[in-house]
Length: 108
Image (cartoon, rainbow, N blue to C red; front, top):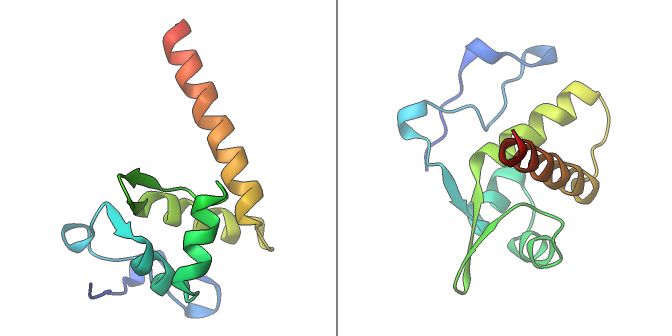
């Protein structure tokens, strides 16, 4: 997947996130390996985090895919916080938020 940087969403210091790509070229889901490559970590680390429930993913039989939107939200939250975001804590909070939204939708 070729990443094209966009100057529309500039970062502090003039850098641009590698996750900002043209919408028509952007897949909705990444393999665990592609997610690892984007985040510059090992495939093994991503697989370990996914299996322990500390990283958002979807399991399709014996394969995992990572929603690109989850990576983008994680990145946005890290930028907004201006500090370190622990992915395990973030994933837990994100899951709870999703559960509350589903509960509200069913109740209302």
